[in-house]
Image 1 (cartoon, rainbow, N blue to C red):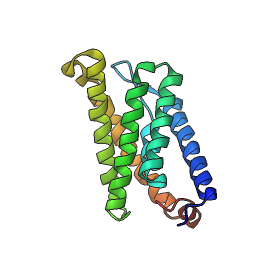
Image 2 (cartoon, one colour):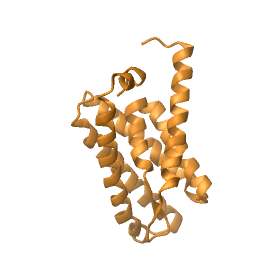
Image 3 (cartoon, helix red, strand yellow):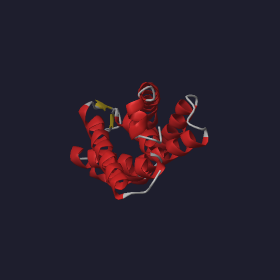
Length: 174
């Protein structure tokens, strides 16, 4: 694939659209968690962005879109943590997916690894904010529920998208 300005602009636009979708998916359906945060559908788009855009652009779209959702929702203390955690999730999912040769079996494996980063990342970030690893562990159960939803939904959506020749032409990483 050539590295032309057209492809760079197209990739930037696609990444921007997926960042916006990630932000919206995070903000639209919010289920309050007992720890004051909320569960959402954003992880589905984070993982999907990784598969569609690859490690670098997927990480950029996911980190930015998720961080903007925290900013717009009033969770400003979480913006830096979310930016890093969601970017790492996407980069990890994309790399595992590519290393496993884009096989269907790679989808849940890559998503599980990404979600492990999310659960551990927010546990450590909450511990940093609260000053207690034990107290921060209270958020783990709701993050595990969000993880399960993200793994299932991203796997189903990706399998459906992979059946479209038009999608495969637009997103060669898929």
